[in-house]
Length: 548
Image (cartoon, rainbow, N blue to C red):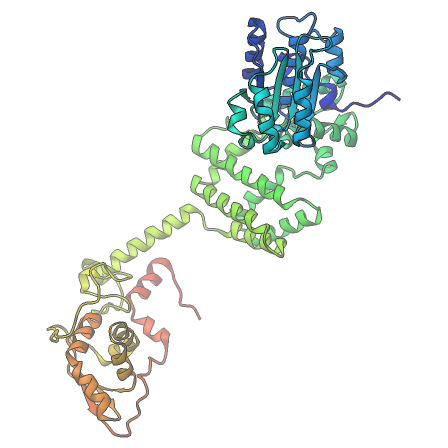
């Protein structure tokens, strides 16, 4: 049986033109080879699986090849074959992770003094160079700055920020990019053609997206798909064999959002869990799904989407049902879910709760319409010209509303700061009914407590006896409490005028043995709401109903 070679090794680029997606690097290196302007040290940085080590080997072969062709190695001479097979004494590949100590670097410094055995240049390729220790980097500095003329250093790293600036300044740096989805698909399609494999475009799209910008990762998944599905790879078989999430799952989520189907959301989570899918993969795919809808909605085009033509049309249709604001809200919710799953004891419970929340959220259009309705309602309730439209209009402002009729609203205005009411006389104005005072007595006490806590305690010890014109009579069991009220009579009159918008005086009456329980609230809260203009207007305009 012939030896099996994985795709990433079997189809490793043998010329600079074959390196996928890094033309800005390979073209520069070829120009340097043609002009003979080869630096003494190069640093290749970028994500994994994008061609850093491959390009380093190509450069080593090209500058040592006996018969180069247009700055490319011929791959047939003895030197090229030895470098390809990894048996060349002149090209040393060193793993920075396992040879990171100072002793290994000292040995390297000793070996650079010796001339190459066959080729013209001795090349040291150090992969994952950022793993070297600080002492190792320091030991390498002098050699790296002034190496022998027959030595070339090529460093590769996925974490450029960990490489000391002293090393960076001594190298020519090339940044490798993530490989585009279309380029990965084209490479896999070409390999499938050479291997005489049958694979549909949807399967190529899934494998390429799974590679996430890494050609090597995509080729590894391609090998796995071939082992599982044989020489004919279909979309359905690939999804089932690799237990991958089908794109239809995410369209199912947006269908649930449109129908606000909480039961369906729970069923979806149950399906995902029972099939053993990774929740992080699901949330990542759902986030991309919402992003795709947002892009189409915002731009009106699907050109920026990394999906097949079939799904481009579906996203254009899907975007008609949502707004950009909706998609932003959904993405924020999913981001929060993904973060929370890392720290929760029961990930399934959190996922179920967030999915139900997701599918039952009100749309941005509905919220905007509700806000417009509330603003219109405020105008009808607060505007003096439209008071006839509000049933059972009450001339007094309701709880939490201060000031005159021109300033009415759902909260205090900026001009309603608590005044100093020490010597404020009772203002001239309309009278107030006893029922209104009793309904709002808790509000009056709260306002008194914010300014004079001891006075509030004194009032709580009394009992409301009733109204006599514009005089409020409060009974106390002893003279001590009553005298405290009398001393603050003007303050209380001014405060009640502010709260009730009516002229009112307070009279403290001593009644030994009086029942000093606090004023009773109205027997039925619903009865209070019957005459409340805000509640009446909410019922009329928005169909609101009181809660039981």
